[in-house]
Structure formats: structure tokens, C-alpha cells
Length: 279
Image (cartoon, rainbow, N blue to C red; front, top):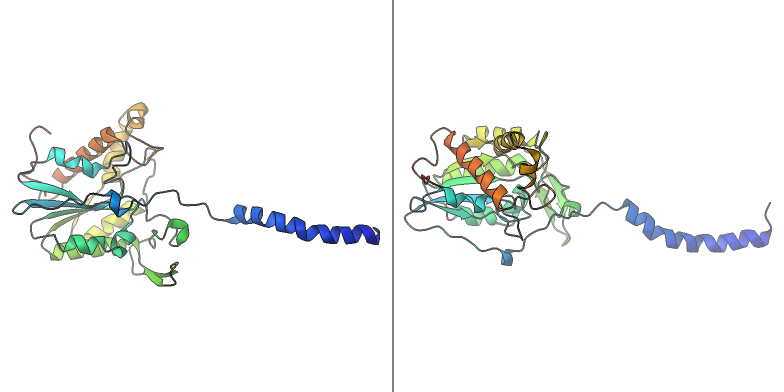
């Protein structure tokens, strides 16, 4: 047995040691921070429709509109393929948003007020819906799936948000724009640089939502991943401005061409008569 003096010394040291180790333990247990940025409104220029011209509306995240450094989204290159006298691209996509936050921030309803009969609406979300529903995912994640399941999430101000499924938001977008007389296309998320198995569950969810609401489905992930697979790896590498999510100008043009080609193959050819002969 140890002496009483040594035991007393240990008892005095242990609390101090615990106070020193506790912050380190907490750091190790804390969830990893979500590094994906949320672009501020002030950094985004609001595009507007033109009276008397059909509008092609885009709702999405930073893979659709970016403008941060060398990064560009496919929506920023789409107008180069179109006859601006027949259709005008209004890109309301904004970085860091999910199907959930584009709804909760009022962006969709604000856009919906401007949509008119005969317009075309393309919707692509998913990249920011994948994370946790709470602060760990910057309150952007959606409930996985397409059903009516909900989860209650407490916000920093004490309010409680009823978070719905990824598919619920997509179906709301499709239904409400269709009710305005617009043609709607729901798009699967564009693939990452490493695209094997990309969006395996999410692509069928988007397709199921499109079928449920009677709108078009454009499998951008499938189309673009197939085209990446046909290229040398070095060419695909050159399309990206970061580790593998955001394209540069060349990659954005490549993806925009995939959007145009995919639209041509859809029933009714939604962009018929609006394409430039020499994009």
C-alpha cells in the first residue's frame, strides 16, 4: 500500500489533470465542422426576366451558379448555347443551399412569383442536402427519401423547424411551378470528379419525384458521369477548380453542353427552337 502522503498528492493532482484533459477529449468527440460555405446574398447579383421573352429559370446550389474564384457552375454557361431573343436564362441558384434551405429562406416562393406561363424551370439540388439536419450541417440537410416523414430540429434562436424530406421539397417545387403554367425539369445532381456510384440513391429519388408530379426528369449525373468515363482521367481532372466538386469554366461548359443535349432528348424538346446554331 502507498503511504498516506503519496495518496493525498495523487488526489490533489487528478482533478487538475482532468481539467487539462477535458477540453482535449471534447475536441476529439466533437463532430467535424461542415466546411462547405454558404454564400451571402450580398455577393450574388439577382438576374431578372425580360418582358415578352420566355424565361429559363434555374434553382440550385454552387454547382449551378458559383462565381467564387475560378469556380463556375453549369448554369453560368448555359446562355452561350441559347438564342437570347427567344429565351433568357435567369439563374437564381446560390452557393451553399439545399432543397431545404432554398425553401426555408423564401427563395423559391420569391422566384415563383415571377414565373409565368410558358416559362421553363430547371431544379437541381442534393450536394448540400446530404449532411446532418442540425448545426453540424449548418441546418441544411434534408430528411433522406421522398416521403412525408419529418424531423423537428431546434434552431439557435430557440425555434423549432419541421424538416421535410428531400423529395418533399422537390415535389413542392415541381407542383407549384407547374401550377403557374411552366414546364418543369427535375435534375439529378451533377457528379463529382470521382463519380463511381455517385448519387446512387438520390438519382432514383429525383426520378420518382418527377414521375409523381408529372414533370420531366433529367439525369445529369448519369449523362455527365458517362461522358467523364469516356475521357482520359487527365481531361476530367482539368475540369475541376477544387478537390472534386466544383468545376472551372471549361468544366462548367462541358456540363452545360450535357444539359442542352439531355434537354433535346426529353419528350416535347423543351428548348426546341431556342438553341443557337453555333454555340
